[in-house]
Length: 555
Image 1 (cartoon, rainbow, N blue to C red):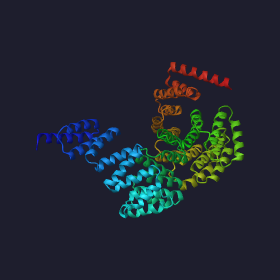
Image 2: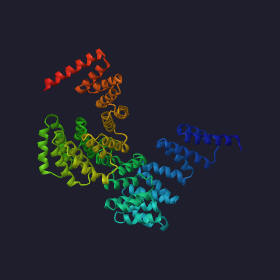
Image 3: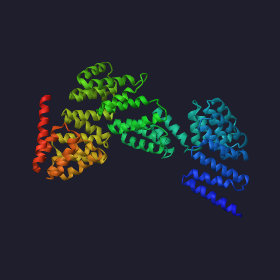
Image 4: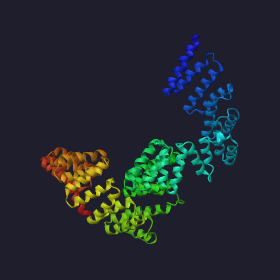
């Protein structure tokens, strides 16, 4: 073997190593050195093809085409080079050039892939009838290719199901055909028939997982639906927007923070992909959640972005009006909403908004009445049920709340929120042991809720179990370090343990976060007295007196 042949082999090996390391530019430079050696035509085709692939991997399609064309000048029938040229032209929407390549492949290469490319391009250029006519002229063996049959199914509305079922007779695991059949059966409401198609599509098929999630959501198994939506998103790599459906499942179990996060991702996807067909619905849902979280400025930004010709525009105006009136006169807002309510008792958003206003005015009985109306219209709504339970607790109607929890938990025993509601009831009834048991069950199901760790810590402090309380409140602060009452409760734990310096450190944090809360200043003053630090006593006594005077002036 000549020395230059050995050098060429070493350079080619090096180019593959660089390619595997994703050092594409260095790999290209190495292959150009190979081209400087004497090569036979077949070697040149292979090297030029590799150069084209490397430019393709770098998204430099013009240079990739140049290299593939050089290879095709040597052998016009090289299938790999033709296929890469076709893919580049097709993916960059240069359909006339793609069709030309596909035509030459059909004439010269005559492979199944060639016919697939040709039909695919005819469909992309809206020549559907030409595609069907061309398909009908193919050999019977080619007509049984499942990928070609799938293309034909996409343009044969009347025969679509028949063709898809034929594909699945030939290949039971054909992914696209299974997904399409799952979609068809789902839209017909035949969920039991849709499930096998989802499973046959492949356990890691994003769309198969998505339809399984949709079925679970329809059946109100929201925890399972959420699990499947998240798995679909992981497999999908942002090809499709599954976030909005994930958000709706979160809303149905009152996980509003998680729903808002999913909606933000969904809105961002719509903007990046310039696909804003249902962005108004996403902005509306975001606005509604932000109102519930009392973040009215952000809610206005979402709601004001909704277009006037959108079906969500009138609903958004109701919410905007509530925000504007809420700032000055919530009672007036209620009167306007009550007027809408007389005319439109089946508007879910109106029902929720009116109930929310009643709740803020502490008109719990009226809020309960509205949510009961909502449950008549939507008897399977988890959201309405959970809101109604919490309102019954606010209204001290513990027996009815317990009855509702019992009925609800028969269907949704893994819903964390019911254990929070139980804890609230037991806490108000001063049954601290049962309240604690309920919070521990809640945290078994949801380990990422700061408020629940805080509530558990509060219960433990009431039970004088200060060490355990401290651990729980620490978890609350770790998850959300911006809430003043968490630091105040931690200070209480340290006071119970007679660790006054630590208590003072935490109550200072609470005051820094919310300097208008007089109770934090009282707590700081009491801790200072326990320490006996005259300077601190004087400081917090002065702050406390100033706050008390301010409160008297406001009255």
